Each structure stands twice: as structure tokens, then as C-alpha cells.
Amino acid sequence: MARQSENDGQPRPASRPADELHETVEEVAATVMTASRLFVALSARALAETEPALTLPQLRTLVGLHGEGPVNLAALAAGLDVNASTAMRMVDKLAARGLVDRQLNPDNRREVILDLTPPGRRLVEQVMAHRHREIRTIVASLPADRRAELVRGLRALTDASGERAVDSLTER
Image (tube, rainbow, N blue to C red):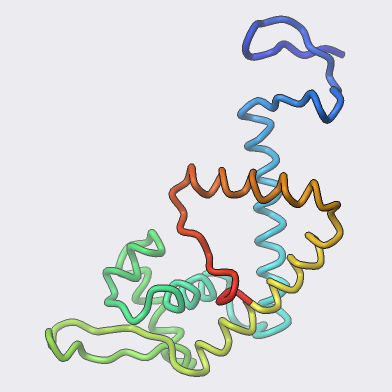
């Protein structure tokens, strides 16, 4: 079965040798979506084995505070790309569990500063370390040349997105 190339409209073979691949945007997007599911599954497993009562959105909030805190509610909401009321509900739940601390800003008494408590920080570090070990195991199974390709591809993807690079030493 042949498919039409997006570039020239000419048929191309349905399967091509790996060294001749020139993926379309849709093929790349589908592959990235598959990888995204893998990363979410790794996070969910790490969370389930570390703190099963916590949800992925709650973990995302904790990770945001771990990387950016201490911050005010508006900055946290912006970092999570949610509205302030959604962030506040999440903070309320996490504060009730002793994972997030709220303090009045001494420079502006109308503003509350949010930060992780020591147990919140430990939890994030445990989940991240678990996830890091699983990713290392998967990556270690790849031949060295494929790992180099993966690094180049993922760096290009994160650069194109504007996502800030993760310090591998703090993500363990």
C-alpha cells in the first residue's frame, strides 16, 4: 500500500528503511503523544508507589512549587496554566495534608506566599527519584547511538516549546 507524500504528492512506500525516514508532522506528533502517555504512566506509577492518595494534578502543583517556590498564588497559577481559583483549591487540599505552607508576605500583608513544607519537598523528591530510576532503566536498554538520537530529538522538541531545561541533578 502506498501513501502520498505531503511534499510532492507522489506515492511513497508504506514502510521505509529507518535510514530513509522523513516523518511528517502528523507522524512525529503521534510519536510524541505516545511518549507523553509513557511519561504520564511513569509519573502515575511513581506516585502510586510513593503516595497513593495524591493525584497527578496535586503532584503537578507540588512539582511547580518545588521548582518555583516560594511564590504567590498568581505566580503558581500562571506556572500551572490554571486560573487562580483552581490553584487555590489545590493549595487548600495540599495545605490540609501538611505538604504546602502559606505565609503572609512581610512586604505586602495582603499577599500569601506559598511554599513546600519539608514533608512536601521530600515527597516530590521521592516521586522524582522513582521516576528518574524508571526512565534510566528504559534509556539504558537503548543502544548508545539511539540514546544520542533521542537526546537530540528531545532537546529540539523542548527548545521548540520554550520549556525550561531540567537540572538532572535535582530531578533524581
